Amino acid sequence: MTAPPPPHAAPPAPADVPADAAARRAVAPVICYPTQALAQPPLDLYAQARALARPISHCHVPARDGAAFRVPAGGFFRITCTGGPQVGDLNLFNATNPHERFYSGKTRALHGTHLNVGDRMWSGFPFLRPMATLVADTLGWYGVDDFGGRVHDVIGSRCDPYTHWQLSGGDQYHHCCHSNLTRALAAEGVQDAEALVHDVLNVFMCTGFTADTGQYFMKASPVRPGDYLEFFAEIDLLGVLSACPGGDCGAEHSSDAASCHPLLVDVFATPPQALAGWTPPEPNGYDRSHGA
Image 1 (cartoon, rainbow, N blue to C red):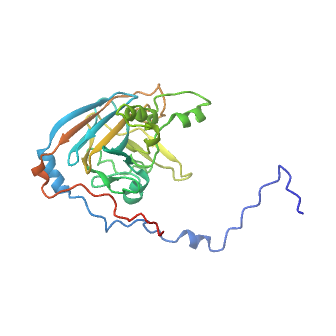
Image 2: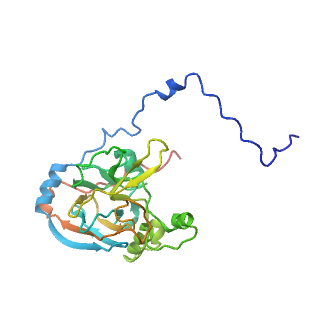
């Protein structure tokens, strides 16, 4: 019988670098999910519909808090920075079935780490269909900065009180985006709201990954008062938005020290004749047999 190693045994030596290491690193990447076969959003049709759309509701999202809004299929919603620079965390749900919700991971796989005009917010399995399409972005000029930062990411999960508790040594903080979204969703009568809150679109947030350590970073958002994102609602939507307690996320989040500001959501309805021939996308057509 082999004796167990002593409790403080040295870790095994790292494997030797293979002779062909450089060649292995030089292998060209391939895109995991080529999207040429995806149906492209009819942006011209959406633009014509937007010209005829009329406002039906406004939702003010207080600083360091969350709020909910509803958008009819074929309508639009606009998220606007109204005061100083402020980022927001967005969740989307099917308005009639909150178990169909935004899937940031698959959206990231299909469109990349940050959303641009024409990209879509996809729902999770087994539905996997477009929920909303980004149709306007006043920060489209930002592009990629010298640090690799871009705006509107689907990387970060959302600031939450559980991670804050771990990193702060036990502080109880109740206005992280996770908690803000939970309260806003519960106020809409959704049962078990916290279990349905999910990874977000980080609206206006400027983020990327460090080149040396690969760590997720944030930097001060370039958003200015009056800047906005606007989306076309592919299905009836229930949205919840948190005005992040990190403000512009230039220094920290989950904090009462950061300067924070409210956000505004405007909802627009489109007359049916403006979308003649358009219908909401059906849930995914996979038969769900999984080979059984």
